[in-house]
Amino acid sequence: MEFNHKSVLLEETIKSLDIKPDGIYVDGTLGGAGHSYHICEKLGDKGRLIGIDQDEDAIRAATERLKPFGAKVTIVRDNYCNMMKVLDELGIDKVDGILLDIGVSSYQLDTAQRGFTYNDEDAVLDMRMDNRQELTAEDVVNDYSEMELFRIIKNYGEDKFAKNIAKHIVAARQKERIRTAGQLNEIIRAAIPAKFRQNGHPAKKTFQAIRIEVNRELEVLEKSIDEMIDRLSDKGRLCIITFHSLEDRIVKNKFRDNVNTCTCPPDFPVCVCNNKPKGIVVTRKPIVPGDEEIAENKRSKSSKLRVFERQIN
Image 1 (cartoon, rainbow, N blue to C red):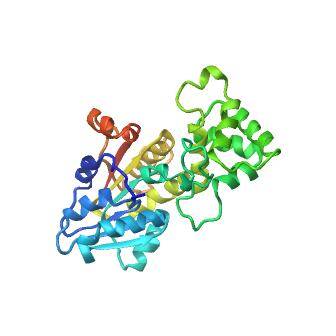
Image 2 (image 1 turned 60 degrees about the vertical axis):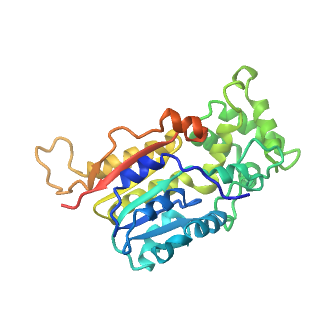
Image 3 (image 1 turned 180 degrees about the vertical axis):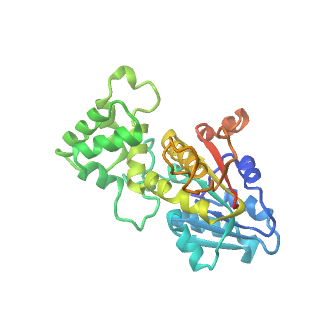
């Protein structure tokens, strides 16, 4: 299957990056290079794009797609949380823009052997974005304690039946190891009262929770934002597209913290810490897709784009 992923909020993101022809830009979640292709189109001879992705299939597809741009493009297989190390090794100090699109690609969802989907009964429980890592969804489902399963389904899936789902998983795996999406679907379905099974697929939230745990998605995002902002040049922009409230909350709070940097106690009459804001939040409210985009690509429905601009005083 071709690595095909419809880039969400494409025009809005390219516009928000405010691309300079001779600038240096980083796409930390390169995927099939949908956003990056349009960034490269706006770059002049001195412009440069660094594309990072941990997914082997994405690297292969993006390398092919970005071939026309030749030496302007450098592609690195890594997790975006290692972006600073990647830039250091390339001898790059400051960059003019960084993009993160935190969503799972359509390719990953639609390729059964990647194990992201609950729609294919025979799909193995894998969910690794980087197949070099050891921990898989099968390991989480079969080896985590009931308490740990409850924690991740509650916190990452925001499922009100988390306790019952965790209990059912533990009971089922004592009879046989849970290896496929079909097995896990049945267990989750049995754990949710019938009248609540009509609100979307009953396994959706649990699968999301397990995927986040396997790939440490929230932890990686939380740890990366501050240092990415620090790496931006003056007027450089960080654009982050999220797909659910947990990620969006992290981005919103981190952006706010980089504006409100004062550490003085609230009752101090004047600031003595001398911490200056690192920039401004460009998006007072997140940018969301229009009706036309949602009609064309239903997976874009929950996406939100937030933009931070670095300002060096």
